[in-house]
Image 1 (cartoon, rainbow, N blue to C red):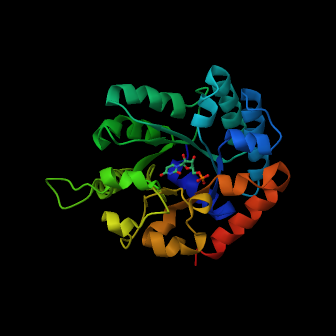
Image 2: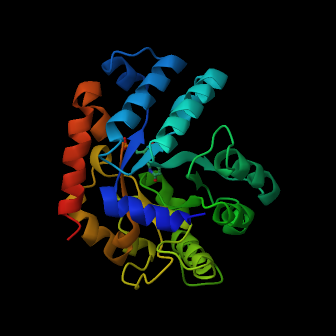
Image 3: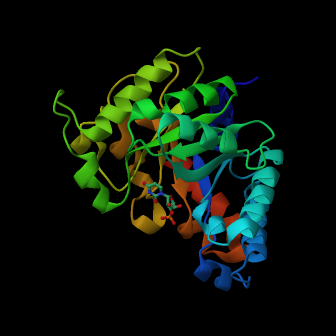
Length: 283
Ligand SMILES: O=c1ccn([C@@H]2O[C@H](COP(=O)(O)O)[C@@H](O)[C@H]2O)c(=O)[nH]1
């Protein structure tokens, strides 16, 4: 079994650091000439997978846009996940799950269990019930060659009030504490190029403001960083080094709308241009 962090490293080497979001918003479905239905969402997802194959290494289906269609939406998502994985893409299910540990274990099984109907390569998790509540799922992911991305400093402005809050017992913020706990967890695992526990850090924020260390060396089990906020939300890939510093090593540049609005016919070109742009600015 290949560790998630080594698979991620191979995807970076072959295709670069761009991650194409699969977000079938109703307005995008209309723009693509597809129905706002489970079938429309499935077709949308499959076309993104087809266009990304060979041009990008990572895709991130946004679960909510399938979930809003109910069980048929989940069936559509199952198909998109399966096709993306069999195309060799690293698939991050953006489901943002969080709960008490014993319940979260079931979410872990849903998204990360080999041969589960919703099997992905990684899933996004919320630490709002405490990073400790995620530990069982972190271990389950690592045992199965999977990854997780835990929300630390998200791209939306409303989040700062919670994520910038300071811990009473330590001179650190909630966001930096999440990163520190993930880094410590990765350090205790079998060595791989990247750890199986990654963080979500929005490209629209300044990690230093949150007390996040962007100068630390990233030797092995480096922290993978899923970074939404580029493109439509305003962050510029030209600034990736300045924003993320040494965390750029494991940076996953995630864009959805800015690529998807190219439409089905312009999609492959948009992915290819965006990927070149991302690599040009990695320095
Ligand atoms: O902090 C976060 C965490 C997740 N997201 C998700 O990423 C995409 C962003 O879409 P764009 O169209 O590129 O803005 C979307 O699925 C969000 O739910 C985020 O934006 N910020």
